[in-house]
Image (cartoon, rainbow, N blue to C red; front, top):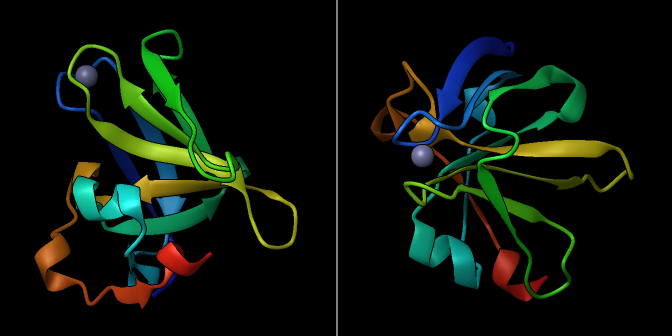
Length: 118
Ligand SMILES: [Zn+2]
């Protein structure tokens, strides 16, 4: 399935974005943060992502290799996306598909991603 356009964001609505992403490429990661977060991810080039609200209302959490910026709303705490650099060095955004309108993550078959070993 090609990428489609979606809107997403945190729970309270302070942080919102639009993104073009392919939900067939969904991933579940076993790293220490993702097991706690329960996120289902899909990745998109940064150019396909537009933060429409909340640039000043999000935190920036880094851990381990500090390569991925985990963006969470400072009001409701929900991490609706993360951004960093893809394997080829280009800017990428990880979309928490649980925070995207019109995506039923229970109908996806996310591939397992061994983030814990990276
Ligand atoms: Zn919020």
